[in-house]
Length: 229
Ligand SMILES: [Fe+2]
Image 1 (cartoon, helix red, strand yellow):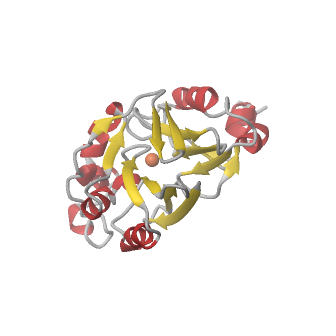
Image 2 (cartoon, rainbow, N blue to C red; image 1 turned 90 degrees about the horizontal axis):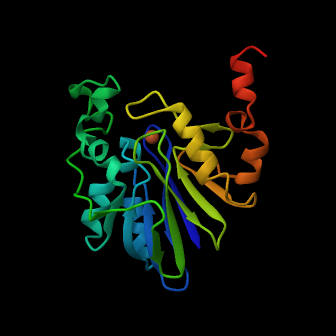
C-alpha cells in the first residue's frame, strides 16, 4: 500500500491518495481543495482512481471533490448517508464559521455545489481497491455520518477527524457529540491492534497503541482533570 499525503487548506488537512502497487488502483481520501498537484500525482504515477472516499462532509475534507471528480470522472464519490446534508451544504459552510460572502474568494472558500454521491457507504462494508480492502466503520461524534477506513492486512486506519495524535476531533460543531465520539473511537478504532498505524485528518500519524497509552481523552486523564482531580 502506498500512501501519498498532501497537506491542504488553511486547516492543514491531510488529503491522501492511497494506491495498490500491484494493480495501480487507487482512492483519494478527503480531497480538501482543488489541486493540480494531486491530479498530477495520480497521472504521473499511472494510477487508476477508483473512488473519492469522504470521511465526513466538512469543507476542509471535501472542498476538492468537484475538482478531482472532473479530472477523473470514472471515480465514484462515496460517503455515509448521514453525512449527505453536511456534504451538500458545502457552499454555505463558511457562513457557519463566521466568514462573510465577500471574503469567500480571498480565502479559497467560494465553493461550487459538490458532485452527487455515486452511492452511500455503510458500516461493515468492505471496499476492494486492487489488493487493498478498506473496511468502513461508522464513527459518529465529530459529525453524524463520519466514517473511518480500516485496512486490516496493512494494519492501517484512516481516522479523519475522529482521532488525532494526542487528541480527538471537535464536538462543538453541528452534529457533534462528545460521548458519542468517545464511544465511536473505543468501539471502532481502539479495538484494532496496537500496531495499527493511525493516519489522521490533521497532523502526524500515530498508532493505536500509542493513543491507548497516552491520549488523555482515552486514558481517562482528561475527565479526571476536568473534575480538578
Ligand atoms: Fe471535520
